[in-house]
Amino acid sequence: MPDTHDDALITEFIADSLEHLERVEPALLTLEENGSAIDPDVVHQVFRAVHTIKGSSGFFGFHAIQDLSHSMENLLTKIREGEARLDAAGVDALLAGVDRLRLLLESPSESNEMNIQHEINCLKRMSGNAGMDLENPSESESVSPEKTTLRV
Image (tube, rainbow, N blue to C red):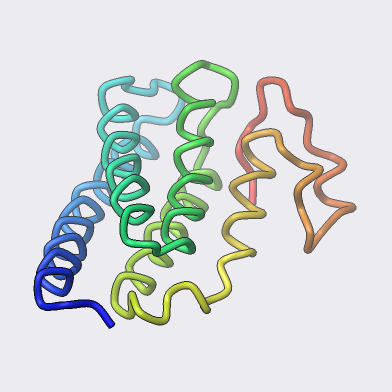
């Protein structure tokens, strides 16, 4: 059972993470509006927010939050490095990740029991890790790892 100090730290982590997500959502919508003219600063902003959530969630043992944010971070890394392009469907997948992270953060003590596999599979498929898709193996085989266009 966490002590009072742990509860205070967890409360602060949740508040900080939710603030990060509030900034991520409009940034993703900006990326979608800009189409192929990806602003690297906006991508970096989204990456840093997701990276912070990932690191902090691991500290507290919130593995589902950590795993989902890690998958989002991997995709954002591919975009930053020019190994993947971001289209509307890709933004939708990242926004779905944001929505799921919000749900996980609303019930952190139960978050490790929540199913996040669909979101992770979509993100992995888009980042070129198609062989990791457990739900739709036939779809994953059609995704090429080089210069992947993000599709759900």
